[in-house]
Length: 443
Image (tube, rainbow, N blue to C red):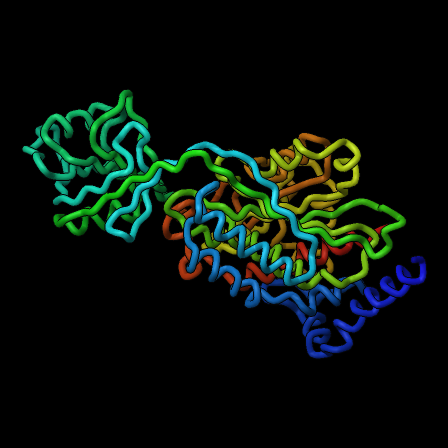
C-alpha cells in the first residue's frame, strides 16, 4: 500500500512538471506581460503549470452549452437539471469523484411568450393555460374595451388595481412590463396580486417590454406553467491530496450554475461555473498537500439555497477541514466600466482566499486592477463565513464599488455576445488558479 501511494505521488508530481516541459511555448507565454497588467510576471514555480495551461477559450466552449444551448437555468426545474447533467459528465470525464446533493426548493411560476421569451407568471393568475390574442397597450386611466384582448401595461401604478381594472374590461390576460428610470435594466418577474384572478398575469423583462412597445400591435401567445415539488442539486467534485496521510484540509473553488427567470446567465454565473470546469481540468493532476473540491451550487438566485444546504449538512470535523473557499460570481463581464476585480469578503477583512488572490495578482502584474477586500455578501461565500471559514467572492465590478454591476445583470441580455470578455475571464482564471493552487500546496 505504501509503495503504491508513493508511486502515485511521484507520477502526480511528475505530471505537474511535465505540463510545463511538454509545452515550452505555454511556459514562455506565462512569463510574458499579460494584457492589462502593469508589469511582467514574477511567477513562483507552482504558478507555471497553472498559468501556462488555463485557457478562457476552452471555458467558453462550456459556456456555449450552458448559456446558448440550455439558456435560463431555473432552480429545481428541468432546465437546471440539464445543466447539472452536463456538469456531472464533464467532471467525471476529468476523473473527479462527483456527487450530486439534492435539496427541495420553492415552486416556480414561469411564462413563455411567443415561444421566444421567458417571463415570470403570477401565482395569483391562471396557470397551466395558453392564451392567444391581440395585445393593447394601456396608456391612460380610461381603459378601452379589452374584450378578447391582452392588456399590456408599462410601469403600471403599484398594486393590483390596474390588473383588476383590465380584467373587468374583458382582458383575457395581463402583461406587466417595467422600464427602469436608472441605468440598470429590469428583469422578468412574477407579479404579486392581492387575490386570485381568472386570467394569466405575467411580468416581462425590460428588453422585451421595449420590443413589445416598439411593435405596437399584433398577437401574443402566452403560456403559463406552475412547477411544483421541485428538487435542486449541488454538484460536488473531489480530488484527494497527493499526500493523503497528512490530511491537511480542503481547498474549494465554487460558483453557482442557476439563473433568474428569463436570463441565460452568461456572466451570472455561467462565467464562474466554466471557470471551475477549466480549473478542474488544469489542476486535476498537479501535486497538492490539500484536497481539491469544486462545488457548483444550485438555486443561488433564490437565496443561496444550495450553499446553505451544503454547509448545514457538514459535520464540524468536515467544516474544520475547509481551509479556503474561492467563490466566483460574475467573473467575465464585458461591460466597459467594470474594470475592477473585487475581493469581496463578508466582513471586509483579509483571509486566506483574499490574501492569496492579492498575492497572485502581484506576481502576475494584475495588482492595479485588484480592489479590496471590502465588505459584501450576496453570494455563496456567506454560509462559509458564518461558520468562521476563510471565504470570499471574486467578481468584476465598477471602479467606484462592488455595487456597480453591469446594467444588463439579471436580464435576457446577459449573453455571451453581449456580456462576456474573454480577456477578463482569462485574468480570473489565472488569479483564482494560481491562488487556489498556492493554498492547496501549502503544508
